[in-house]
Image 1: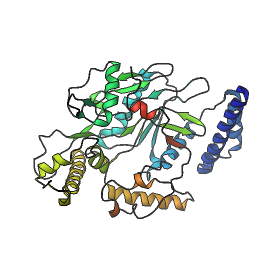
Image 2: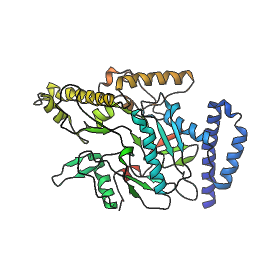
Image 3: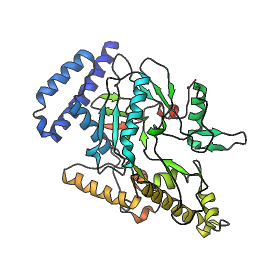
Image 4: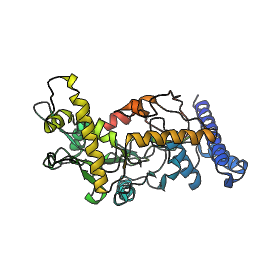
Length: 378
């Protein structure tokens, strides 16, 4: 039975590898005929159970995974993704150090660059390293005795888990930057503080008047997702943090506005003097618009890359047309592609999409959600 399972696994890896190698050579004519490379890969898989991507294969695979990301509206620039190849790294200390360097390079003094850093893959001999943090930069959520949360409630479980690992906590503001948690190969998860020069933050102020300047609102510049696997042609990279840049509504209509996050709309409405006695006054809608204006204006004044949902929707339509001309269908999840505010004013709202999954891809494994909640961090 074990021999049959091994043969089945080898066959699955080879099938995925063959599909990817042919894709890579088809989309990169300079790579020449795929037959020699296919023979090399097949021999390596039959000998070891897996294979190693060439640097060019890794770059193309990571970029196509972004192209295939059905929940991402910002795929127009998929082919510009910067790929940092650190597959030789397996230890938590060296991985954490390169995650910090990733943030510095991606931040780029505010001119944010889409970047991915790829660490060691899973192999038949051992699993690869894992980054427990949902994103490289997250704000702590401290559970209070009265049942409220100081900071980001989304991260309350993770914050408690990191504290069980020994993190003493931050200064106790609503925007304390959490440490990263990295688990190297054959190791336990460990926490690593992010140095201040790796975390660019933008103070959020309203463009009209000074009513918000004493509030202390801010958000970080780089959304670096770190708990998704990069899967390319049968090879899985469990630690491969990647980032684009923010769309304003991610911050202003979700992170700061959702009732299970910072829930700031009531406070914004009070500061703007809106009538909150009835939902029919549309105070939530008006507060939401002003909060999103503040986010976009604040990032612009700070010289930090951000896009708005109208611009990004138009870019997505351009992306779809470019892909159509190349004979490729664009998969998309409507509930993620349509912006969380003013959706019907954007062109992405008025159509349907096929939510077809393609490979290469960024995927959540079964343990990603549990890790993001800090489960088993002891």
